[in-house]
Length: 368
Image (cartoon, rainbow, N blue to C red):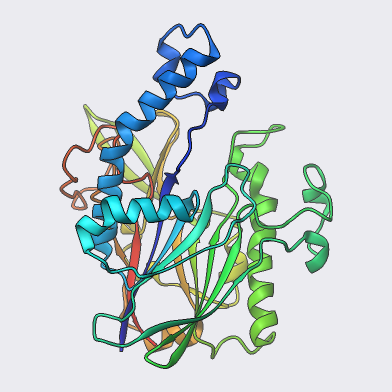
């Protein structure tokens, strides 16, 4: 039996306005910086208008990207709450896929902005197998002390009693046509700005390493350390880290070149160094594994994979020919595609926005 499993950071599926940019320029939308806003009340009116004006196109594209996934189980990141998810499904997704996702799961996590991980599930697979969710468990409350993961690298910004996951690790047990499948849905700590002489990725690496170690511990506690290889599970989500990237060189006038780079250290090494799980994206060509274009200007541009569906060894072995699909039609025009990878964007896509998301959905067909 075949199951289509997908993950997508839908980016800020919010049901409320964020006015913090009035007092914190780092959180202020760039368009509002062009105007002389004299009062907080005026700022709030402008922010409301700006948000509403561009959200409709953005969510149409998000729904198109999800429709192109055609997933039976869809793992989402950056969902504000169940009300926001239901409003998005009713107002946008329903128009693309109909009443496909009857089962919805979301548990409030740890993110200070309120964004959470969520899972949308069809009642049946495309070949008619019943999809039954038998258990849902949040691990948002797990602390460094609980798992003995506190170390000197974390001490600068954390204490042992702090929670490990900056959002959550949501554990869901399914029966697919009566066969078991467990998903662990995550959204790891973002890279953030440079700090204390370190670039943003390096400065936040200890946090993601702890999150990855905690996910592995949760799985080993569940199935038994050393006994996970023959279990049917997957880890899905935005890991906010990568083991390789494609450096983008050149410019629009003279053309671009793309240079693969391997990272000497990644939080994701905790998953892969001993074959604990498999990143099936590596079944794609080296220049065609990316899910996000990162740019801080011409001096810092690369393509990388931030979005993952890691399969357990047993699940990977059952699906040796399954290659993930990457839905890139929702990417803004500023994204620089390697030659031969260009796609037709969704209608009304902008240079930077509107867009479906900076992230590309990833979907894989698997037998369980």
